[in-house]
Length: 156
Figure (tube, rainbow, N blue to C red):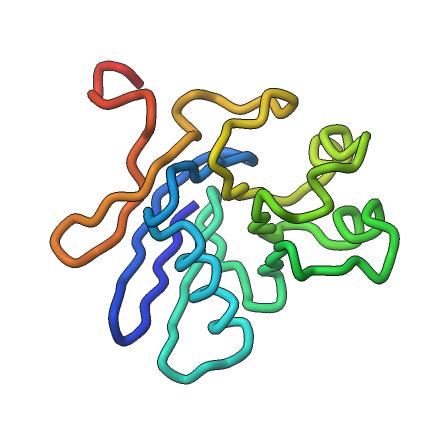
């Protein structure tokens, strides 16, 4: 999956692969800023632009980008949310109530969507490859995702 997100101040350029991806890091590492900028794109703020392309080269439309954070309240059964749409991307903040559901790992597994979880700590209950765990880093005025554990090409 490729995510290109930009506003007047910052540009994010992420390359991820697979169904599950984690963005981790301490406070002040632009994790929440990425989430808030993406939320502005969803609200049609004119200065924010975004393109998301899935692992198969298909563009993911704005209506298939879902952001779940601590202010997000679920008005319907969460099973329906993840099973009613396919090919969507769910960006989930660690404070979202959805991550505390007892069967959410199974729900994610059965879903045909992509998941990006933004958290300070890695979730042990989700089958995530070490090369799908990222930190954010600023390189030449662009914020990119960098593998947390595989630092060299030979590690992958």
